Image (cartoon, rainbow, N blue to C red; front, side, top):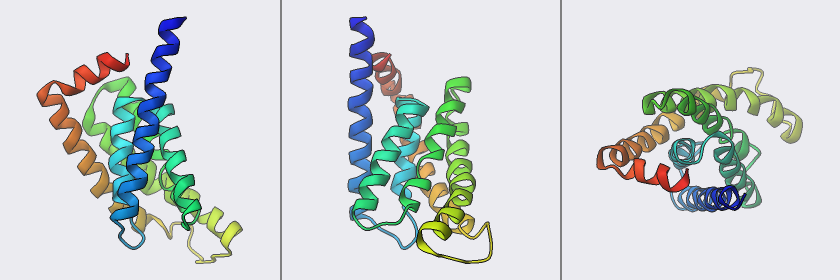
Length: 168
């Protein structure tokens, strides 16, 4: 019981740190309609803490970004990638598929979810249900690519194995 509590405490701490990292990076490096550093952190979260803690990290960051003046897209553009990427990583341990999961989760699922929410909450009527896909996908590709590069370096240096051992 004590080991399980210690484990979840470590994962919660890493989750909070990842959320803070994403928030800070997205606050200082901003591109119009793009948040590539969210996807960078989503890949790290999917690999390090898994899909559900990754979801929590993205949700926390998205809520903080909304409190800073962003729209609901700060949440919808972040939460699907780490879940899909984390589930894929859990099954395959293939880092390249985590990249693909982040891009599909954000570029497709997040974009399609944003359309009705932006219409309901913000009155945006763009007449195309796929309107956000061309905006979300490039950001996801760039950010997930950066995340993939970092976890591949972690893997090559043995750091990824040590991090997993520390969290498992």
